[in-house]
Length: 208
Image 1 (cartoon, rainbow, N blue to C red):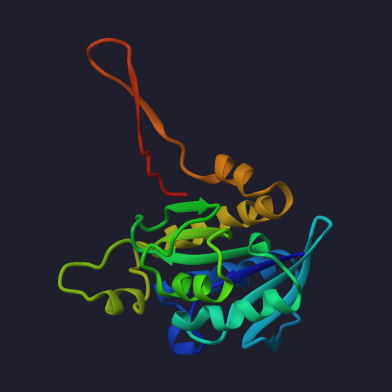
Image 2: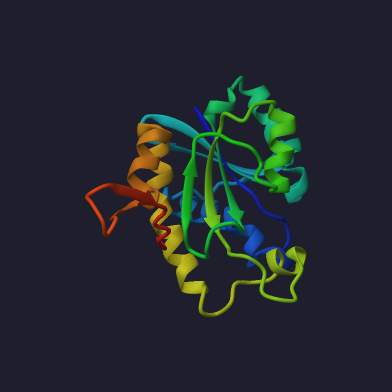
């Protein structure tokens, strides 16, 4: 059994904001899996589905972003799931719009939703699917940035990213996070120095 949680804020006013890309992916995954029966439970909007032979819960916490752990922690405890049974989808300002990063564990990276989950789950060992939203434009605050819709030129990138991540999330469930990271994270590019044949790796951030 796996719990796939997309982070965001409830309410129509937040539906298309950058902070809600986690909700967007969960909705797209529900449509992909032909799931339409949602219920409110554990302070979340929850739907059940199956991926392969694995039962999964699709979860959109209704506690608002900064208190996401208040919904996810009790649900893990109730179903006796470990942190390794949790997959969290969230926005990330530290990577460009449309870029994805799958991680097996780690710190919050300053993301308040992840901070809340860490405090309520008590472990860093849960998979994260990070969707890049880029840094705030000049003169914008972080709050202005994350609570604004995507720019018109970025909207197609996000649609493509969400479509790209549907099989990636499925892969995490069926084959594990390590396999999904190797398959769906942007690959490092190798460059040769002009002198000699020694190769160095550099991050090759590419849009999905």
